[in-house]
Image 1 (cartoon, rainbow, N blue to C red):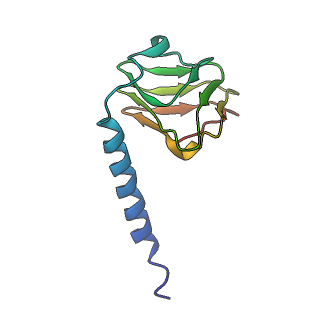
Image 2: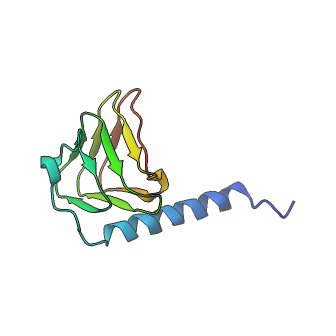
Image 3: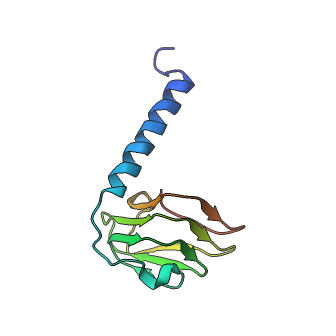
Length: 119
């Protein structure tokens, strides 16, 4: 059928879209401060905006994103993102996971039974 492109084409488009989103997020200007919490953002409630880290980010306890359905959150780091086992990313006030962008230059680690949200 001509309605469904071959799988490699879909994969190529997805990778291109991912690269576009990553590059866009990396160019956004900071609006919420640098190296918030010394990189340990567990236990915090984040509001919409751009958060910039020049250090690794740790999520050692639950983190909350609070805002509306159209609010955007961008978390940029030049390092790694590590989420501890059994922790959660909690969305309040209508925040949508599709509007949370984790722009991580290095490795992302999500612990066992952890709940990560965002892209």
